[in-house]
Length: 515
Length: 107
Image (cartoon, each protein chain N blue to C red):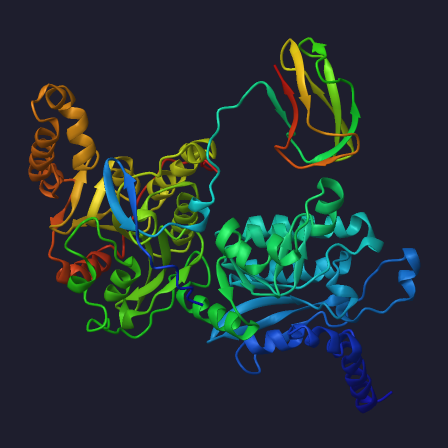
């Protein structure tokens, strides 16, 4: 064969491999509203930037007549490309080829691109759409999963890892997404569970649909396993593109700088957002938007533990991670879920050099037997651990209430915040005036002629004396009491001066966080 | 992507203060704590009743097997938590029981 024939031969081979599972399987995939693996990659990456590798990889299974079967690309596409100019390594399981089932060579393709991403120090994106382990390949498919999990763990905190669940992801397969930084799901398409409805029914007699057991909404609202919820694959890809713009390529870099923009203060005016009555709620996301460039805020885990708000915004062009109590939901209390949510995000930002801005307004921890028995002690401790350990710039703003353990946990000076600002409306105290007065003046209240009137008098006195930022400021626990309209200016200055921050922690292999 | 939550504000008391706020589904659906009653034997796991060894009114001593609950391919012996008398057996042979379902009442 001459060069021309050989090139033709290559093209013929490629055509055959590029077809994936063939027209019928592709039709089936589309009938349920799903794109093919290739379409997904093309939709996510910048035009013409996808470079595919290992197109000609074939499976090596022999049992159960597998040696007579040809599975194009062994059911997974891998390669490199860019998203808004940022380089990424990517893989997408192809459900049209043997149900996207994971065999040994399939896994090898994935681990190869993972090794690549780790070596090249670029983000890794995995699109999951697979029926699970390829049973015919037995223990080799389990070995394949194990190799993936191991690499997910090694890459954790070195390169950003993004999982996109666009189909079933069941059994052991779910642990790869769980080990990565961000999980994207789409309504009616994503399904994640360890054991499916069938098994649950036969073993336990409980009946539940796939969607109710492990659909997108469940993982966004209830389990907290997923971070971004979308109604369509297209919306999901836009979310990924947006996220990639906020995060750096790896842990030795900072996120890309964008042109500076002013917040839309006419729409988000701090003075109009905060109600004068401290018992009235407001949406803390409006406060965040009043501070960020162009009032952009990419919320993470929007539907989970809504009493805590986390997410990315930019200030003067640089990415900032926001952690904020949400007075609009459960008065912004800390509880098991909101602690988990905040702690993990803090660690993410710390690992990837993203400064943290913490907005505080909380009455404390959520009381309840269910909370105590679910281990709110150990979960709550994660927040303390994450903040204490974080060495990125940490700026705290106390807006209204900061009571008790909640005050300490929300990045107080004691956990080494670099700057703590407070509005004049801040109340930093061991507990709210009502509770405090009841305890301190218990005897006097009981002995008083009119206990209620006396209690009210004591509450008012306590409020007057302690429900303000000045007691804490007198000890230096607050660096500056500022007027709300000055907030953005103060935060951006604090961030600017913290650019070269350096902290030396004791040398250790690793800590033992209260997981 | 934004999911508008129910904006109806409720009074939420914490630390002697009440706040106007919204409540989450999870919070509303939380299980209220109940003091465990030693006389009420409940299924600790969903499963099938594969053997009943006692009858109404029967005297039993602590540790005596009362019934067998098969779950996850394991036969679990449900034993008497104390000496006493069987007040009522709430299940029949081959009943499929859910978690926390009342199985036997003692006195």
